[in-house]
Amino acid sequence: MKYDIVVIGGGPAGLAAAIEAKKNGVDNILVIERDRELGGILQQCIHNGFGLHVFKEELTGPEYAEKFITELKNMGIEYKLDTMVLEIGENKVISAINTVDGFMSIKAGAVILAMGCRERTRGAINIPGTRPAGVFTAGTAQRFVNMEGYMVGKRVVILGSGDIGLIMARRMTLEGAKVLAVAELMPFSGGLTRNIVQCLEDYDIPLFLSHTLVEIKGKDRVEGVVIAKVDENRKPIKGTEKHYDCDTLLLSVGLIPENELSKNAGIKLDSITSGPIVNESMETSIEGVFACGNVVHVHDLVDFVTAESKRAGKNAARYIKKEIKSEGKTAKTKPGDGIRYIVPHMVRPENVEDTLDLFMRVDNVYKDMEMVVKVDGKEIKRMKKKHLAPGEMESVKIKKEDLVFGEDAIITVHLEKEGA
Amino acid sequence: MKKHQLVCIVCPMGCHIEVEKNKDEYIVTGNKCPRGKAYGVKELTNPTRVVTTTVKIKGGLLNRLPVKTKEAIPKDKIFECMKFIDSIEVEAPVSVGDIIAKDILGTGVDLVASRSM
Image (cartoon, rainbow over all chains, first blue to last red; front, side):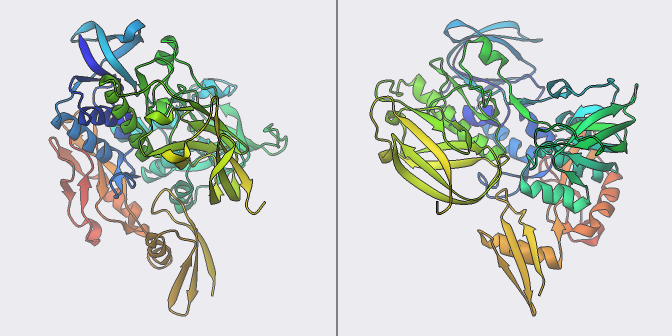
């Protein structure tokens, strides 16, 4: 089998990338999805609030997905469901398997990685104790409740205040469960503020910041959990333990880009984002292999995933048409004070159309700051920010004419106290 | 004249807004767009939410069909609404936007399918 572009993953990133590649003149595209339908995790995110940027209306996850699935099908883009990619080999030859075609070797002109991310599990955060039933990641519980039709528990404690945990606190409450508490290790929530309001405050669910889980009780099924306050080193403080009788523990303790395929293919990863190092075209360290969406860095809004994936799709098409220039200068982006990471990691102004978007996250909660962008030491932009939090992705638009620099230049973004 | 500190939930910006009642008028500050103003006033006078949940479906790819109230309904009717939705069972095929139940609980708001199945 031979395709111009093979997209790995049929979630929001893969769908948007494939559609945009086709719109940019590449016809021979294949999307490979391991689930039994397209749409990815959006299909289980039945709450609303998706699409405010892209469609200017509030959609649920399945509605948002369906718009793209319909468009993809109408464009006649090929896709394979229930199909697992095993390996991205040399010269962009992809090995994949399913029950209809068996083992396949697919030669791709360009590859777009859109595998999304996975949840950190109990093992990832090393919770000690017995291993009873009733411990779920929030996303797994979400799939059970919203798609398969199984209720996962009646009395629930949630560890972590990521968006999925918050959304599930509301969801479980609506379905008749009692959510006793949400415990968050950090002194601030990792979720969007609007979700704290509409998922916890609306239902009087207590959020304990600077708290963690110290014990899971129960042998066959969870019978209770103990949470405790933590000190500034995030160690539990003795004497602050609170016991909750519950049958279910949901974990919402972070997401990790799903990069097993990328690693095995030898693609360079960023140790902070856990995603591939990409340039302005969303191309990875392997020429012709692009990446977009949560596989690159975990986004908080699908709208941003869509925008980034369109860029990857368009550039993959340009790559196929040999329109991407590899000569010219390259600058690296470097996070300064207060910034944890910046995507993309490298910028070749030759390939930037009108503006370049930099996406980043801050490393703490800040108030009344200024975000400063410097290109090769020269300040080109300064923006006031009233409120910054790690859970809310920030972005900066840079004009192409500001991307003028010498050899080995660095683009930095840092935070300064307002008026300092 | 009590000041209410709210976080606007209309969009993911999450503006920190302040609503102050001045005689019969509500004054909203801190909002970055007009929707924040409307939200601030509504939240103090008649808070509403869109309810998203699922209903049973027969003959579909999955056991549950996601549904939503087409418009926001009063916040204090959410649980009553959930109880009502609990009794609904539909049969595939269903298209996104199909009305699953009309005018739920006399709110004038319909319950619609939020995906095709």
